[in-house]
Length: 61
Image 1 (cartoon, rainbow, N blue to C red):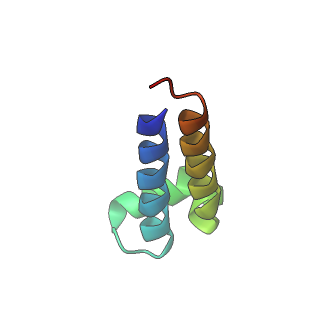
Image 2 (image 1 turned 180 degrees about the horizontal axis):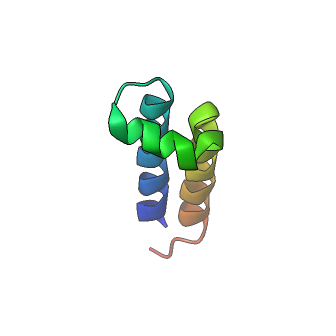
Image 3 (image 1 turned 90 degrees about the vertical axis):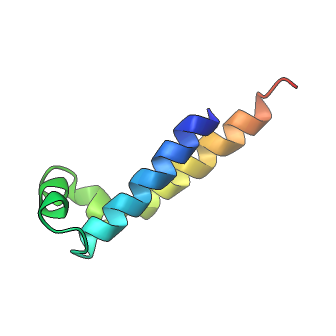
């Protein structure tokens, strides 16, 4: 679950950069298909936090 949290956090950063037109052609394509996440990348960051909390909650060590 921590891998999922890391992936969601990385996607949040990528959508933030593409929403601010910082990554060029790829950002335009990303915002065309995921315009909600380009406008509000915090949604993915919140999901990453929930996934990390869930991973810590169910972790068996």
